[in-house]
Image 1 (cartoon, chains in turn yellow, green):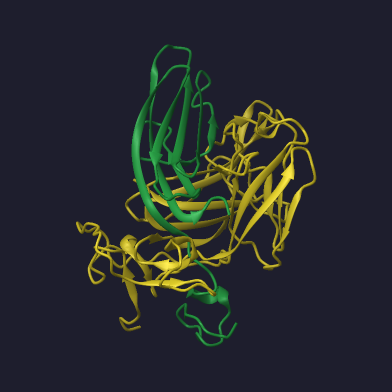
Image 2 (tube, chains in turn yellow, blue):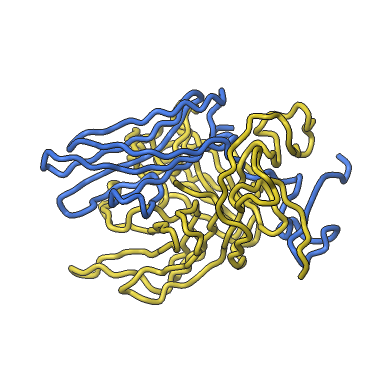
Length: 272
Length: 132
């Protein structure tokens, strides 16, 4: 296939020579698109929040806790820092948020607020593709570039939050995405990305026998503070790969669960 | 509203007829847009919590995301929030949050030895709102 297409670089980077991670958009790479955003509330130990999106496939999501005053934002955790990953799941049609007793150290009945991001993209495989790596170009404050607003907003006056894309900002360009099943109880599942740096990534797990996905988190060996049980849907990002797994205790020994399906998106963003 | 806008399809799909799922860029759906990213490290004394404050200047509550390492090597990164034991003798808890002025990264560490631990961290601040 010939060398055709379109690309837009971030401000201050030469679109012809800059590394892939400094592009705002390129027809060579997919991007993470926001299907919808939701502002929802519930009470501690109250009814579950359900969002019927009816996408018909497993889609990535992120939940932000906005506190009891709807005036802060915590990434996938309560105000006390404990992860929500076991309390948020997404089937092919419905996302559910549970606010259990003890959430964020709050009394039952306390009203809590959340912002939910649901993405349009699925986890069909996208093979890794690197066109250019490395650059010494720097950013520029010059006011030029490219921007597209969302439906219904004037592109000349729209706020940053009302834009689809702008060359003033970096975007979540997909380097690699797909799914894989775990088959070893002794080792984590590893997927190579070969970027040579630690990238941003989102990883979700569909546990064997279940029909929903949940976000994986950082730590495989921990005691759940609310239930007292062991949990651990885990991922860790390396400069050449990501590793994923669910750790569980069987008797006195730890194993990695087999038969789980992991859904991953690896972005071109560099994490350091 | 009329049928207008901007869309670019993935290779092999007809941009006029393909589903939204097969587009790279589509004015119906915004992309997640980052405005600030950064990194650093913080050394936490046994039994203490360090608070890192980063002014974002956006004037509203943004969407944020952060990572940290677990071996002081800056080589492997784990998503925040995270908590647990690095070994049987150690305990830690790290999480991130923000308001309309600042992003906050919190790092707790304890090992009972009176020593310290250095966390490396990385954060993304998006222009997209963290509270609608």
